[in-house]
Image (cartoon, rainbow, N blue to C red; front, side):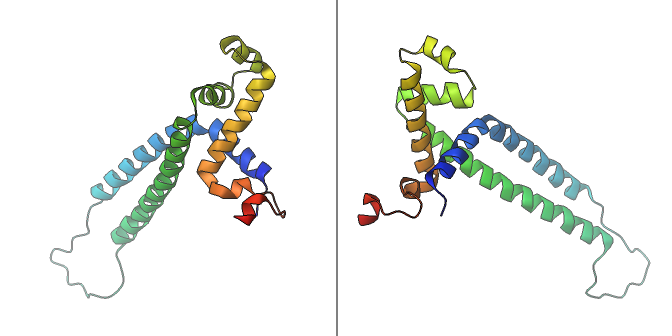
Length: 161
């Protein structure tokens, strides 16, 4: 089992990459569209006037369609996984209270420094850092559930529930 720090580090990195994941979804949609066009544009082999013995072997065209269709299935699977993660993160951010959402967005997602955030919000850097940590933990819980609350290899009050 991972410790809390690993969950929080992963969550913070996921938040940093959130915008890029949304762009990646657009790339995946375009890739899927292109594969669909490629599959539909493949020409079937015709055997007009040629005697052909039927067997279980496939044609080169069929093999190519299968390869492209498998690539499309991979794209669909990757899209589903990425969309699910983006949706979880979006929901988790939306469920934060206003100040936590602002701090998290400014520091982690937009990459602003603490001085700039201090200028925009009526809190000290120390308070802002604490709010950022609380927000990241809240998002981590939304992503990973109650396991984030447990310390590695130690009994907690949570284990007594």
